[in-house]
Image (cartoon, rainbow, N blue to C red; front, side, top):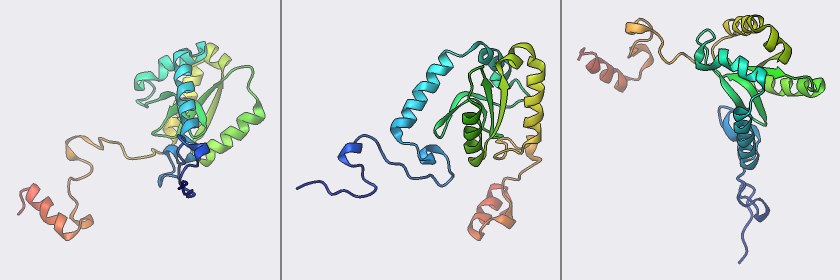
Length: 186
């Protein structure tokens, strides 16, 4: 008997290429990108990380290791069907280093798509990176400092000055008992 085709089951033509539904958070492979395309983009991004342009190398020296204001960046990050030169995920900020051959219309379309995903894009020319690194870093740091964090900091404060371990007003009755016993308040 033949295989029954279901809309969410890959057809024989699509065998090996999984279909993706959007993830609840709007991230991951739910961008409408097939696994095959995603793997292609990841491979291309890896190649780009291994063979950066000279301006990308120079900028990365200032962004790597959270050197710029403590902000963590990734190089050649895959975002949906795009590869961003540099990404600060905490702020949803993308830095693109543009050479002489960039298509302004295509860049505008891409930037609009990334903005629809919630990302902000800063475009910097190769020439600015090579001749005005201080200006580039000032621009990027100013933008980062003006943007809200995407999620709470993993270490909110030292010595328990910020978030408390248990907040009875926000817990259900059963969890309150656990919190009190954990805090020695049984």
